[in-house]
Length: 195
Ligand code: AMP
Image (cartoon, rainbow, N blue to C red; front, side):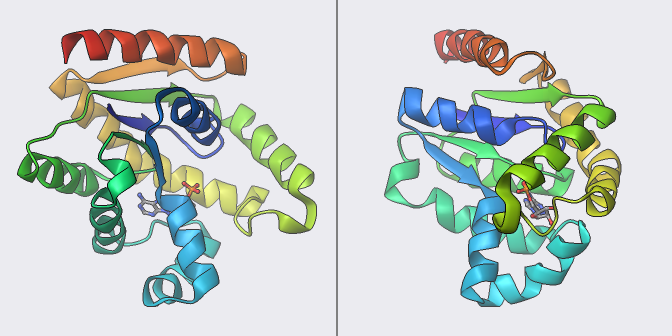
């Protein structure tokens, strides 16, 4: 099973990705986590990405596409994966389609989390408070505004791209966590039945 979780920062993609991984034994591919690991390791990718991430802007397509291309090759991703936070631009979506096509693979579903911006701000502030000293550098009100602007301007067209392909399912991400999980389960079951 190959899924994309699409939605703005704080929309619950990471929480639901973890549940999908536990339930289906697929790999969790979060470009945000991969980039934060690269920043911590001070690798060439990390050095390039750090200031951009701290500002709340998007890391250039060629950097994230390179990271994902390598990660998809790892053995644990062969059974399937859930992409969390990628693709975030139409260019990334096209690169992903090509990477998968070259392997004779395709996406089963793209799940689009809809959450109002006021709710996102509340969630991100809560996450920062709960994490205390370990909070993400970009989980603050000011940087979130930039991350939301990046989402509106660069990422929103990705939903239209997948809608046109007929593989987008939009869900209400403001429901209780378990209700969102149940809705995702239904989408995944339907997609698997068609596969
Ligand atoms: P996330 O953990 O998904 O919220 O990502 C944190 C930050 O990493 C984002 O604000 C971007 O700076 C960067 N990032 C993560 N995924 C991508 C992506 N697919 N394209 C560009 N930048 C990304």
